Image (cartoon, rainbow, N blue to C red; front, side):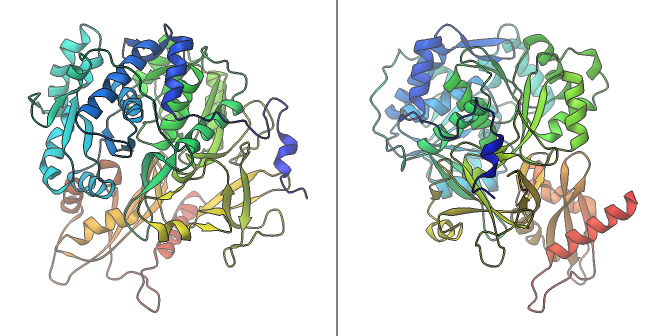
Length: 563
């Protein structure tokens, strides 16, 4: 068996190795502005920005960040939905030499505070609706400045007039923030005089471009240091994989959020590198997405299984023309085979599954869009990416195809390490291989399959949920003696969060009360959908709760129901 059997299946158009550009991320926007200046870079709910306008806006953002004290290596937090402001802020921070830290807009005060403290950001760029949450915790962080923007800031007339009324009706929140002291209006920054691009002093291999937070069951979320080289390499691999597409000619649908590394790399960074048009939606809504596809005709549609499932289940799906869709790469969670088939039948395009992690920028494997693909497999390693299955006992490569073990990878997209966590960084590598925590196998052709997760992370609707985060909150409730959280099968979300609860003697709390409590302290996607109260939980001889035992119970129940 050859060392890299998958290479035999590469189409001739895909290179085995790539000559990566030796430049930092923002310089790709400089190049795009020069080559595609008048072409549309962003379409957002009817508003369009050209590459020249995007470039000039990013330079204004960079100049302003420097003016308020941002220096090379400082962390700039971005807490925005997919929007022109999100792209401008990302590249503006990069032009200023800063490190971008993405925040999920769904985070609660508790989650915002933890991540701000850990990364030490001095500036945050956020949506106006999020300002009250940030204001409540700012005194316990290193934040010096809040730059605020609103969805209406980049809507065309008359939507920009109407939207605030719709927002007030939907959320009940009206935020008035004065543009003074440490509060800054994003739209006012864009009214500043034109700014010049300054020379960047960046070490491509060692300077982080992004701190992307991920987590695990043994601790709190940690910042993954992704360098300029990591992200340039992964976006370049993505471009090589989609070899039929021509720079400056494609329209890419941006539903996957940029605060998720998958959306950041395969939509935002790739689009700027290739001069594609980004078709951005601030949140996923099935009907809006169907209308957008029919009207704007995107050709590339990165997504997650839950997105494709929601579209397939929409009662009006067949009324829309989706034939512009040529290729979709599904990530974040396993792609059901029947969903793949149905979506391809309706659109006429290709829907293939990929695989990766935050620590790998994120993609390491994918099926071929226009070559041999195997349903149920996550595909083969990308150019310059090596992968093996290692023994769960020894961390050494297994000998035979089909043998189960942990997937381990090497490649230029693999992270530099975890922010301020050298010990955890060391534990994640073995003899130069990054240990993914996912259990799988490789077949004789070199195609990889993921069968389980060594880590107990839950993936629900494409969101990564770490049991420890949820358990910490539940344990703080006065009625709780023991709690454990696990992912259980869900036909729509892939998995859903279930909490197993043991109450303290003499205490009482019902499911509704516990749900209300969790919603106050957790982002909505992390809140358990199911609560099960028990007299005791399964444990090892030393008292460790057996989460895996509970997961097996759920799998057995599901199999019995299907049977």
